[in-house]
Amino acid sequence: MSGFLKEFRDFAMKGNVVDLAIGVVIGAAFGKIVDSIVGDIFMPMIGFVTGGLDFSNYYLALSGNVKPGMAYEEAKKVGAVIGYGNFITVAVSFVIIAWVLFLVVQAINRLKREQAAAAVPAAPAGPTKEEQLLTEIRDLLKNR
View 1 (tube, rainbow, N blue to C red):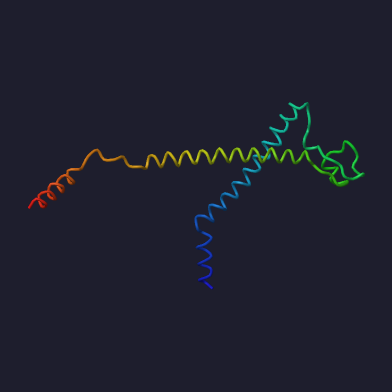
View 2 (tube, one colour; view 1 turned 30 degrees about the vertical axis):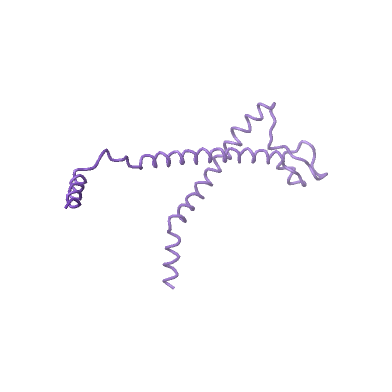
């Protein structure tokens, strides 16, 4: 049984598994930040530009129990509704996340290119003294 536990520990402590776990935790926190940016900054600005529209309360009532003018959350409790305003908010959130991730990947790729360019050794200016001496010895041996 201890061999199984050792194998599991080795698997769980591999770099990829730990990196993935860290990525999931950071991603969840990043998702909350994006939700706040969308809900608290972008959607109110969009509402202001469009004349005070609040997308979060846009829905299509599918049930006769839903009274006109009800808030979306209340309408969901009363009957079936299609919350297209909520969908618009989630779509804006997705676009923002995709844009930020694109910028992050672009920055990482730029850093990798810069590191790769810096890692390429420059061609030597000429043979070292040791190489010159070895070349002379080779030529002397060849001429004998």
